[in-house]
Length: 263
Image (cartoon, rainbow, N blue to C red; front, side, top):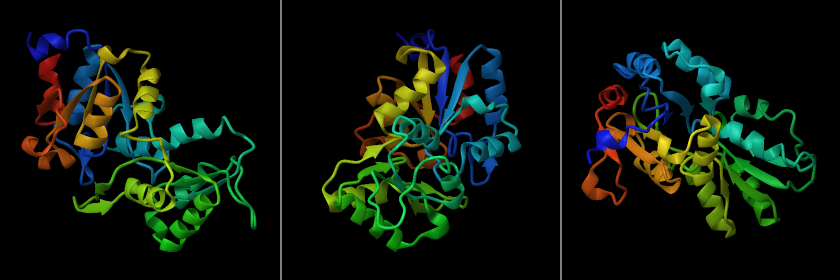
């Protein structure tokens, strides 16, 4: 059976954003047009990302400015997932290591005061104040019993110039290793994050595809959740060499616009 035949039952796509829809500050050629055509063919979309330095509204605004026809309810980020988690524990206090923009997203949630020990230590992207003392304070709280939460598990990302930058997952796992604890990861490649995203589509695992440029975060995460993962040769995907990886995508395509041929 051909892979095209295997896609006959696909009703939706969980699409990565940075590196898949846009890269280096511009839409990837053909991505906007492909999205429009795929919508016309009846496909349902959820755009999920590991971006944890910006609010979900900022992520949406950037996509819309690039010309992507996307609505607010189609965006899913680690910040949304973390809010859903914290809402279950309204009396528990947190210590945040995030950007100023993201910390504003949690203004309604309890934070520690003075010498209090938090219930949760939350590590996110904090590139606007990249101070090691913030991490050390977080580490001390974890040693004293706070639960370590990471907004996502990426080891690195590519900035607007395409240069690699240490990402949230590296800091989370560093603290976890030093404190000998197991963190909770909310973004990719967490299986739970993929299943949360899937639930929002109201579709089943065999009715969706994951499309992304990161072999570990996107494709391995999809496999963990029982979903077919398609790797695009844009963003991080341009550097993928299959013989160096044990992770096997369902399919490798040139770019997001290449999806058209499957539908």
